[in-house]
Image (cartoon, rainbow, N blue to C red):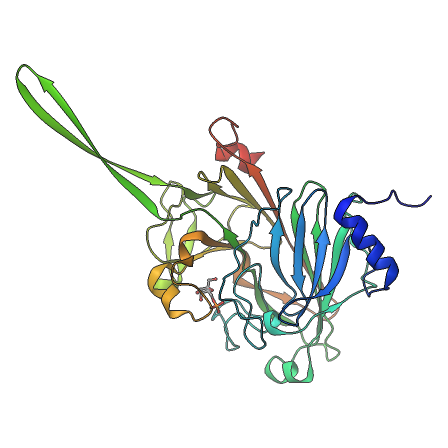
Length: 360
Ligand code: TA6
């Protein structure tokens, strides 16, 4: 029995797919050329839900909810030209996170061209997910000179029926000389948030009693954006020579540059954005650590592919494997998964209780 006719945008994609067979065999995924000339895959879900993945870097650069609202940060100064990595979305750091090794910062997967994998090994997935694409990266001769290991890196990007975005990585050691290899990894996710800075108010009240006037002055600090789930975790501080500290017991709010690798972090982390009445729930599998990064004003000015004020509206929370590199023997395969969902959260939705979100 033929699949039910997809509605709206997916119908158009279906017609297009039928008209010109693309390497993508799905009505919910379309390969297009972006204005930069780089190719990207557009995944269309229910209503206006949509995801864009560039073959360059295997990088998600856009994730929209059913109101068509962009949920990921992409710099207005992002450079879409190799070998520069695209500033925003979800760059993949492999086979090295940051400067944890002697390769270029964050390894090379984010500035290589991936290809569409039309025949991936089966992956147990929820059959309700129609909008997905499989990409694959293998090392080039040049890569083997800087990192002498054969691997197959398969990436499935999927847009769920409720608008959730998932990235499933499978990395296999295909060395034929019996050598294992080790690597570090991160999904370097840039979230789009409302003003991340702690905003303060001075509150003056006048009280008059029995002929005298007294002024009471109070300061209120409001942070629209907070991260929950990393309280009391140990972390390596990249701003202090990777020294190890323990996070204080409250939600993380932001008032200066932050660059921390939280160790053995819980599988669920929440980013609560009061202003946007939304909570991002970050769920991770096979990735013990979580990096939190905001460059703040000075670092922002120093980055050519980043707007001076853009630090106010982005936050990176990056499921990662940093402290303990992953080691694979030949033939072995590792799986690392990230699932992102954006839930409405406001005082009245009752979804503001982070524990409810984290333990939901
Ligand atoms: O993930 C945090 C971090 O490692 C920071 O140290 C900062 O350098 C950021 O990544 C961005 O790195 P990039 O190489 O993309 O400029």
